[in-house]
Length: 99
Image (cartoon, rainbow, N blue to C red; front, top):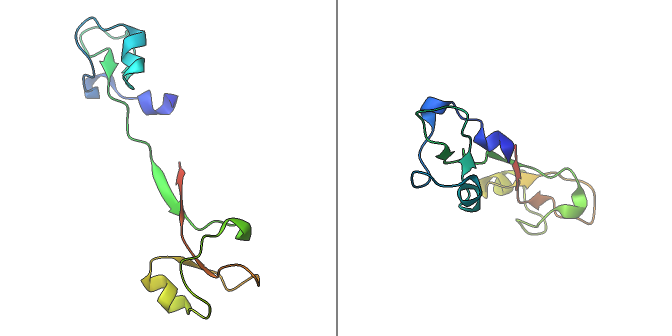
């Protein structure tokens, strides 16, 4: 993602040999920007930011408990708890999404 390549030139960490082409750099999973002399042009991307969320759609819930589990028991499993609607897991796993 382009946002992963927005790094201040002085903070860039080299990601390829001197003279690497833009294509070879990107193929290696790195960022390429030759606009600033004296700093790495091929550099490591920032890690993706992810967060855990409780899915809003009851149809995508993945069961993390058992019938009759309490909210406290579900929290001890570090899962989401919503006691509605009927017919879907009330204790369910978080989903990881990119920010």
